[in-house]
Length: 551
Ligand SMILES: [Zn+2]
Image (cartoon, rainbow, N blue to C red; front, top):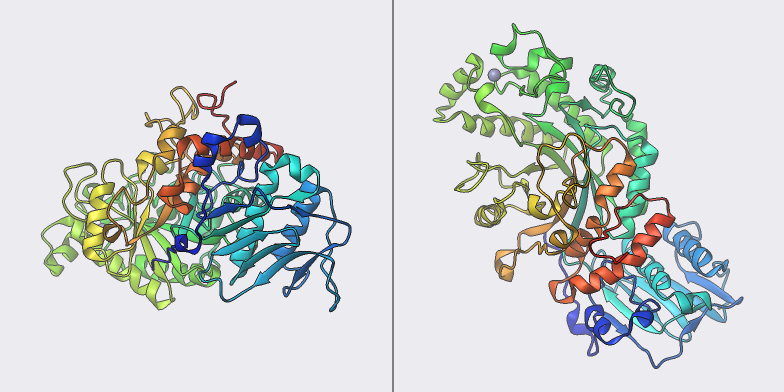
């Protein structure tokens, strides 16, 4: 699972921006090929003494890809936007006098590895995959963005970038279950995250507040479950049709972003039990369903209808999303108010010889994961331990071997790292201390509503995040990546979402991509600024970190 690469042995001469920035005066930094690189590439060599590449009227793009391939179009777009040149794709066998080359080259090992080399003669991007080429183009875009003075003259500094990510999975999680975001807004969000080399978008599609994914065999799930809030002013209701999700998936795939669906079970299920009240535990059956009231319902572990319905749901979701992964929640289940009081669940517990009610999670997920495997997918779950804060000693239940876990609760991550290592589980890092982007960025800052006393995660704190938690290599080998969460109880639209995401999402992007040795807070702050300006120019709402950037 672990696709980390180490390319550091390839070069003798390596410059990292944080060391360079100590030498360069401020104005030179503002006009340097490195000043907007984010995440910082893992190998950069600047040939200051060499003649730069110059874009001329004769320059053409040489590539074996079709001219309408997405990364070719992206390359043309950025040369046009930043250098005001229309650079055509070279036709036929005629070799242009000046070359921008985009080459699939099998010798560049690794799925996201790319080599960008700029000399007087040509500007070349090589990778063995389209994903790698796309990242080469994105890095070139930041070079042009940072090196304003040369860019204006139609020049690109002579340099070489040989870059591959520290972790294979770099995710952000959107929560359209709490506040629904239209398709165009999700695409807008993907466009920005792809710029910073995030490659996974997790969509939290079902929760207490709503059911957002069309299931054709059970249309009432969205007909009713998509519109749970009768008082909604607009953004709180809605759902995605399967056709719309295909559109989002295709848009994301062009930008090397994989969309992972999340269907949260067995808790966080008020929306679905509102549609099918018989899925609740037996002791709830006489009560009138109270929509919008405290979210206390779980799916009954001893009801065959639950497993039959979820087999249909997982079959359709598995067919819809090309990702190998499906996230099934597993968090915050209020077992003591549901399974502990349900005669059916208690009977099942007795039959299976369980000592504790929480062990019913084994049976619940055994059944659900049978469907997941049948439809060719692998499950991911939020990691829950036997306590919600330390001291905690073991998993809440026996997670099957093929499950990827996500660490999230404040204070529990070191224990989660230890347990996942011992049990052989892949681990995705979303610790509340660093990666919960829904928390305020400074005391007194947003969110102004639905704030339950959230802890503060400053930009600097977010930047301190080392996904390996400083552990020896052998003890962090099972860590597959990072995930920033954007739980949306207090995010009513996409502008609020991006405000909460940036700039902390830039810090997290670098944590996921860049080796610790090449990272530095001061360097990050300098590189962040041109990126924030660029995001603003694109109409992205960001929080200007005035505590870091002088006014
Ligand atoms: Zn029950």
